[in-house]
Amino acid sequence: MLDISMAFATPDDYMYGFGGRKILPAELPSKLLKASDDVNTLTFGRARARWDTLTDFQKATIKRVTCMQADFCEDNADIISNVLTSYGINGVSMSFDVNKAWNVYADDGVIMEQSTYRLLSQTSLTCRRI
Image (tube, rainbow, N blue to C red; front, side):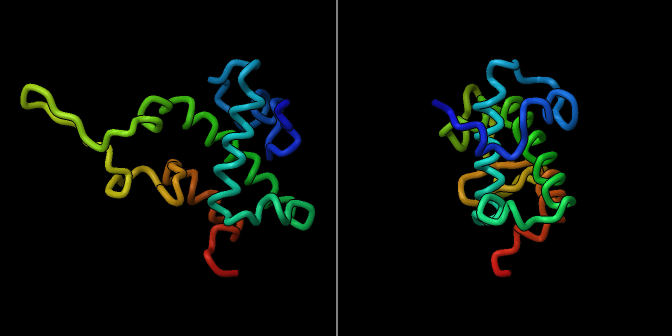
């Protein structure tokens, strides 16, 4: 069974606080847990490991970023899960190079909107060395 207690944001945080209400209620626990895992990866495991010692600002920011990441993943599920880096047919081509995209941040297999990552960076948990 899914342990939603490992998620940084609750379904109520998403529905009544930070989310865009794009995700169906039945899917929220798993999507918030996945988004929490993404956030934890981008904070090098510090968010989960240090949760009890984080400031209220850091916790609120992480909850907000988790909800934003869940929405981003929901909106872009097809592109994120696509294994192709480029595609072309009849002279028309499309590229999926996230390392050159100006509006997304990618690290360690996680893709996040650049503006959301900047918000997460305000927690000081995204620095490689602390």
